[in-house]
Length: 303
Image 1 (spheres, one colour):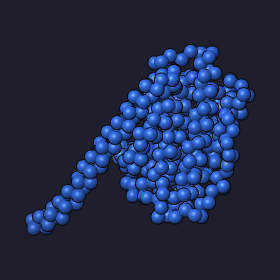
Image 2 (tube, rainbow, N blue to C red):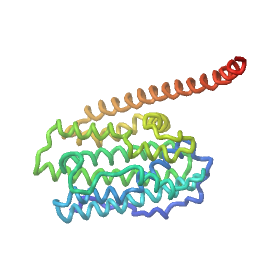
Image 3 (cartoon, helix red, strand yellow):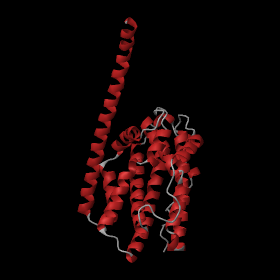
Image 4 (spheres, rainbow, N blue to C red):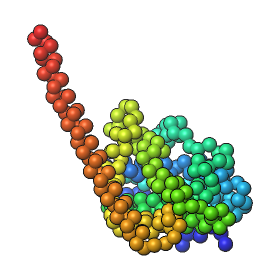
């Protein structure tokens, strides 16, 4: 049985009616998120090369699964690029993508997993795909454009299938090599904490026309997270927890899943509040500096 189940309705990036996208239907924050994600998804071939190297010893069925996954992820990048371009604002994708690839290196394809083992790599991949499916669901439910909703819904379904593929691989690997609860939690929670890493934040900085000339990861993360996190509802996080729970805890438990979903929801709300407070403080500081500057010049002139 193949690891990756076929899509119920196979699709290509060219299947959607991008000409129907109304530029005013995408708020500035959503457009910023779409552009960021278009860059991140468009380096799918690098992700595929890395995973093929890590899983090289596992045989042909694993390689075939990664090849198909790679092809589907490539379509994700194309669809998001078309959607972001249709939403307007002069998205110079090629130029920005070149800067992104030059500025952020991916993991070396030397056959070694940055997670320490094949099983650890699979835990991390399950987390990524579960969060990606949840992410697209949250964006879909906050989008007012029919084409955008259709694209995002399709991507959400794909990422759920991709989660199923990596989960099946993880189960096969764990049948041969036991993975402890501590190993699952260390890798899984660690991967969740990397959502503010350079892979995403540099992309978010490059596509923001209002960005500062110099890249400051913390400032970019505040801007990006403040745009994204309020879009998540508890129902979205319940979905994420149902996928992540068995990977983190090694078993299915509705109580654990619900508790984990509430923790995720509270964490996002707290992070959003802290980010907004920091952004407001920064804005006030700049405003105060701008107000004080003319006064300083006037005093200096009198002297």
